[in-house]
Amino acid sequence: MPLLLALIFSWLLPEKPMGHPVLPPHAPVISVEETPTTADELYAEIGLEGILSGSAFQEGYERMVKFGITGNILAIADMTQPSTAKRLYVIDLEQKVLVMRTWVAHGQNTGELYATAFSNKDGSHQSSLGLYRVGARIISPKHGPALLLEGLEKGVNNNALSREVIMHAADYVSAGFIAQHGRLGRSWGCPAVSQDAMPRMIELLAAGGMLYVHGG
Image (cartoon, rainbow, N blue to C red; front, side, top):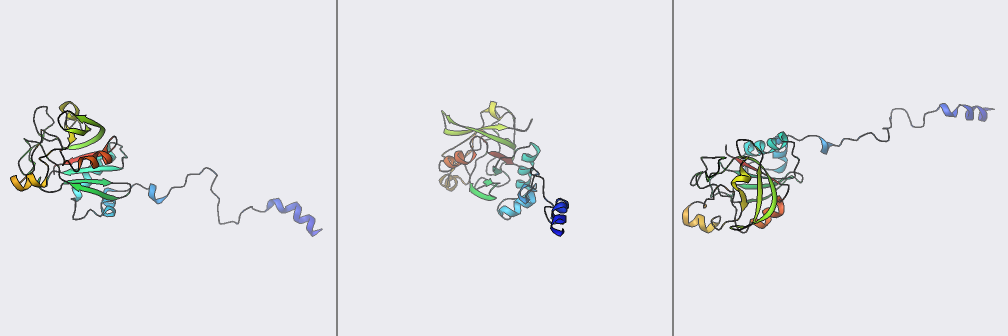
C-alpha cells in the first residue's frame, strides 16, 4: 500500500528543488560585458591616463554614442597638441587597448606648430573638427592609397567629402621634416600621416573605423 500511495502522489512533487528557480528556455541572460560602459570606465580600463587627455577621449567616445555608432576602432587626433607630438591615437574599444600612436598633420591655414583655426568651408585649407566615419580605401591621383572620410557633424565637418578631405600619407609627416622645420608640414585640411603609418591606418580603419578630431 505505501508503494501505491507514493506512485499516486509523486506527480505533486516539484521536478527541481525549491529555492533554485529555472529560467524559461528562451529567457535572455545578460552578462557583465553587455552592460553599457561609460567613457570614464573605458578610459581607465584602456590605461590612457597620462597618454591621451581624458576630455579628448570622452568627447570622441560620447559622440559615437550620440550617433548610435558601435564601431570597434576609434582614432583620435588631439589637435590641442603641437604637430611635433604623436597626437593621433588609434584605439581598439572592444579589446580595450591603444593599438598605435603616430603623427598627424593639420591644415595649412589652421596654424603653424599648433592648430588654432578650423573650418568646414571649401577652399579654406583648414582642418575640420568633430567625428568622421572612415570610408573605403581609395587611390588618390596625388597621394596614392588613402581613406575617404565622411563628416557626421552638420556645420562642423559635413563638407568633408565635397572638400575631398581624406586621410593620406605625405612626405612632410616625418621625423626628418620636424628636425629641419621644427614642425610637421601642413595639408590642405586633410589629416595626413606618415608614409610608414598609412598601410596600418588602412588596415585598422578602412570601411568602418571612426576618426574624431579634437580641438579643445
